[in-house]
Image 1 (spheres, rainbow, N blue to C red):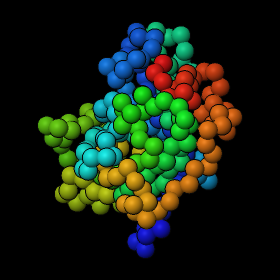
Image 2 (image 1 turned 60 degrees about the horizontal axis):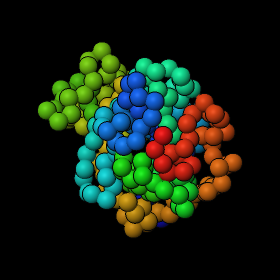
Image 3 (image 1 turned 30 degrees about the horizontal axis):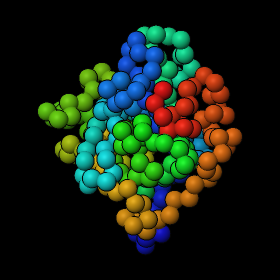
Image 4 (image 1 turned 120 degrees about the horizontal axis):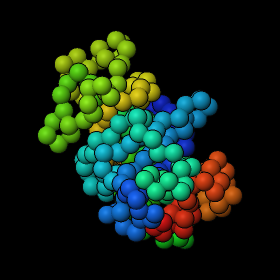
Length: 235
């Protein structure tokens, strides 16, 4: 681990995509409506739900590619199978994650390495990735590139957090308490697809290849389509 590396949080990370309205399956990124990320913080009863503004992550192989996202607010219930107007979200990636100062990093455990990874590759869910996080000041207007949420949906931070922005449009995700507020908007900025090379940190997988140790399949069973997760193919 690098001398200046400090880990603030560890946990599990999962990636989901939802097919477009009235489509029972997705066969390419054109069929995808939304990309979601779920982060379960270790040793805390804390589950963060992220909605990405685009249908993919920033490509970690390309430096400083920037996408907008926000926490909470949009339903993605993976158990809604059979509802044509809102098809269930598909699990497509599962792994371990930690947050260091302003970095979010992860390493996938599923899909297994010997499987295909067509949806993952199409949506920039690389086997591992590192991203910078910048929190948006809810009191500042959006830009032409990232207009953001409507005022009534934006986060309301307590004074000690809001005060860290000053007159700035963005600040680092430090402390991580920023991430606990529904409507918190952020920029996710690609940094690297090689965590050890970039940060001197080895993020170890907890399990790999064996579907029986997948937390997603344990928690949701048959209510969540897991073909993309376990086989690396569209569903």
